[in-house]
Amino acid sequence: MRLRIAAVGRLKPGPERELLDRYLERVNAAGRAVSLAPLEAVEVSESGARRPADRMKEEATALQKWSITGAHRIALDARGKSLSSEDFAKRLALLRDKGAPAALFLIGGADGLAEEVRKGADFVLAFGAATLPHQLVRIVLAEQIYRAVTIISSHPYHRA
Image (cartoon, rainbow, N blue to C red; front, side, top):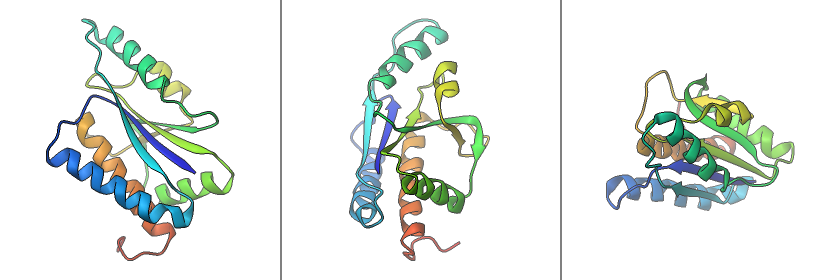
């Protein structure tokens, strides 16, 4: 099953970019064995619109361009459902086992995701109630995807 993270905003070269790339590489190396690869991260530019609603609408349009036909759409939003790492792994494995061709993870910009993106998602995921910078969320998500791959493959990375 293909995995794609589509996020608003660009990561500049530096430690954050290196950490994201490290988790992408780990998932792509380990995920093949459990049919959870490739994982890619794509970025769309932040909107320059003046009003937050206009920015979110423009960013939603840009995110839609990275959709994958038949993909299970997972929006990341603080108002979503929090899952344990084990439950997140089970959810990915279930999607794979049901024959989903892909999972598309959607991360909004500084204003969040447009309402139509959240409503159009198959699942809304939260990493707790705290608001995290959109640059950091994609790193946390990539790590959780890697952790899910290791849980599914019984690798010792996940020790909880």
